[in-house]
Length: 251
Image (cartoon, rainbow, N blue to C red; front, side, top):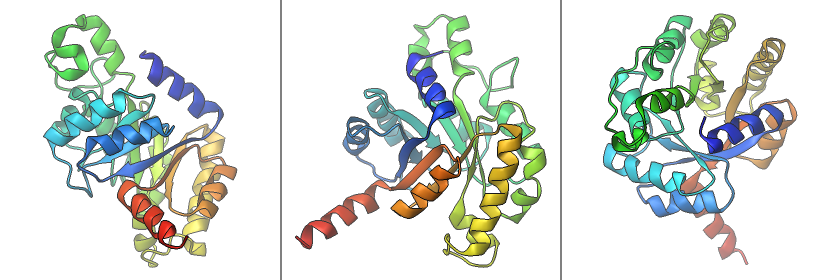
């Protein structure tokens, strides 16, 4: 396994890791996050302007630091998953997984044989453009992180079955979409949302399943970290930049 990815997985098992979402098209900003000490960045292709060409440079920018580059794909199609991994992403985050069947299919599309059925091409960035021996590449590729996002009532109902799927590294609870599904859109600190998430945490601990979530206040970050959510994404790069400028104006 790539040493950076191995170190990340080891840290994830023992303490929380911190990153943020990126919606910028400037790879310098991604690189700066790594120099700032972020453990990972989620390069957002679902709710951002990032295209394949930009993604290539973002992944390379992340790889130039100690930070992992995770790609949130638009959906769990084989094309989207394979393209992100071909470009060298350390992992993929798949939105709106609501059933065990979808989780199983995600594993198939993200892993090479014998773990899955991902389309094979050795002439890609992830394989050093064919410079890596095939056996080395296929082995390393199957160690990439697979994170599935659970965001609605259907996913909540299927949680017990979803966490039984082998090959999923992290189940990420999307609080904003979850809040909408629970009838309180945008109110991610509403008791209904908090209670639903806390019930999932209890189940995950029993099964030894790693959870992740998004937070955008220090209070929520401390709350979820204290309850044992180890994969924590705090805010969005552009919003964090804007907030820093607002605070500067108050000096």
